[in-house]
Length: 153
Image (cartoon, rainbow, N blue to C red):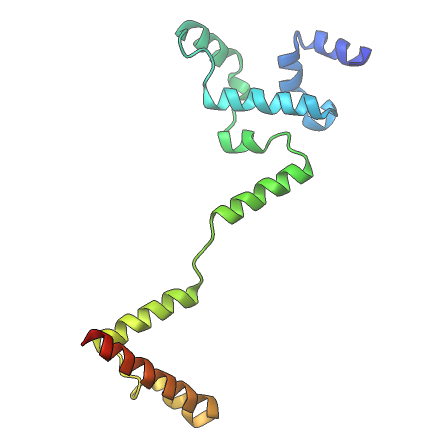
């Protein structure tokens, strides 16, 4: 710790207020930013002094101007690599279902219930008139319909 840092901590009347009042860029220390992040997380969660309501209220009032949401505090003080890793974990945990699977399931249900008849389907007729692919699609749809009818019966 440098002499300048000691002076700044004294000017802020303690390490906690120094970390909370100083912008992240000015702290210029990974350890300092980690400490600030932990302080902000504890303040946001309100998990300090659970058995002593008087002390809990004192801390809550003292640091009221530094309260931020848990989501924001969770991102605070992360370097670029840590933030990227965290974002990747979030994106991987929420994997959306591709639309084609939803549409496929809907089509299978409609075919099984008899709602949809591929012979009269407008799209298939358009595909047939346009290309050879339409004929293949019709064959596949007929085979799928036959299989579904066998499964239902």
